[in-house]
Length: 393
Image (tube, rainbow, N blue to C red; front, side):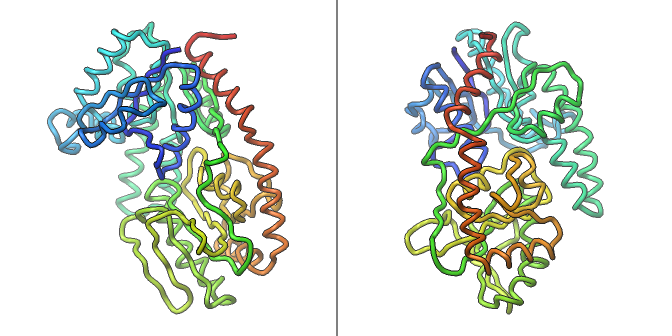
C-alpha cells in the first residue's frame, strides 16, 4: 500500500504532544510493510528530517503567514474559523500534484484543520480523515466553563466547526478516531461515513516517566490537552484542590511539568504549597515519586500522558472526562473524582496509603497490557488501513 499522510507538523520522534507520538507510532508500524510519504508545512530547518527512515519521502511547503487577515485566507476565516490558519495554496497545489503523479492507495488528512484539503482530490481517490478529538465536542465542553463575551465567541465557533467537521468527514468517506465515545459521536451524525477506532500502539519505550519506589509523592500536573483545558485544570488545582490537600500536608509540592505552560501560568507559590515549572518531562535518577493529577473538564480523544503514567506505574487521579476514552477501571487502575473536594480527598488517600499506590501500580499495568495489547493493536491498525485503502480481506 502507498499512503500519503497530510498534516500540519512533522511527527518528530522527540515530540512532546501525545497526538504526535501516537501518529509516529502508527506510521512507524505501517512503514514496515508499506510505503508512506509525508506532506506537511516546514522550511529549511526541517529538511534535516528528510532522511527519516519511516517515510519514503517527505514533502515540505512553506508555512502559512499573515494570520487570518492574509488576503489568501480571509474568506476562509468566515467559512472555516478553526481551519483557516492552515489554508495554503502551496500545500493545495503540491497535494493535487502528488495525488495525480504517485497514485496513492490512500491519502490521510490528520486533524480537522487539514480537512479543508479533502475536497481537492478526485472522487476516485480513497481518503481518510483522522480526528484525534471531535473538535465540536471539545468546543462544547469549553463553552461550559467559559463566561462573558468569550462564551458567545466560542458558541459561534462551535456552530461553524460542528458543521464543517461533518462536511469534511463526508468528503473523506473514512473517519479515523481514537476512542469509542468519539466513534459514537460521528456515527450519531448519520452522514453515511465509515468510522474506525485506531488503537494506540504503546511500545515498551513509549513511557518517558518513571515512578520512584519510596518517599512521599509529589503531585504532578502536565500539559495534556488544549490550552483552555490545561488552563482550567491548573486553576482548579491551584485554587480549589491543592489548598485542601496542603492543609494536611503543608510541605507538599505541586510540580508543573511538560514544556511551556498555558499562557500566563508561570512558576509561583503561596503559603500552602509551591509550584515548580520544569521544561523537561519528569525523569532522571534524582526525581521523587509522583502522583499524576488530571482534573480536566475539557478533553477529547485519548489522553496519552495518562496511559504513559499508568504504564510507568504512577498512581493517577483523574476526572471522568479525562479517562472517558480509555475506560480505565476505577479503584483498580485509577482513582476518579470530578468535584474539587472529592478530587482532593482522592489525592490524600494516595498520599496516606502506600498499599493503595502499589495496588494501582500493579492493577494499572495489568489492565493496560490487557486493554491495549501491542500485538492486537498492531493487527487492528493493519486491518483498518487495509479496509480504508480498499483491500478488504
